[in-house]
Length: 55
Image 1: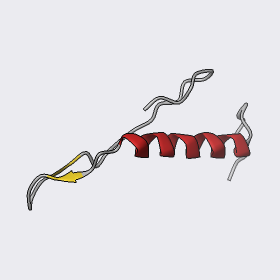
Image 2 (image 1 turned 180 degrees about the vertical axis):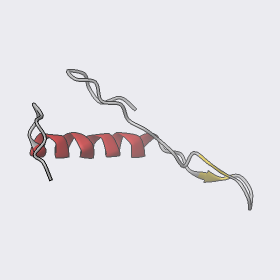
Image 3 (image 1 turned 60 degrees about the horizontal axis):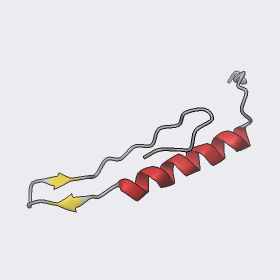
Image 4 (image 1 turned 120 degrees about the vertical axis):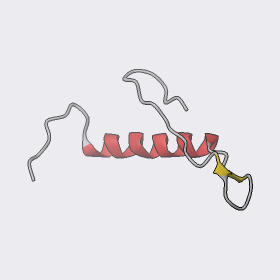
């Protein structure tokens, strides 16, 4: 496996990843609509360099 050339260290990327997961979980609103339908099971977070993580 090649070492990636990235301006962020792995520990910073790990912290950013965890922040993004938590931001996405905070807006996820999973619910059962019926025996056959569920909604709100998918959420996302967006990382923009120099900006706070948005959900």
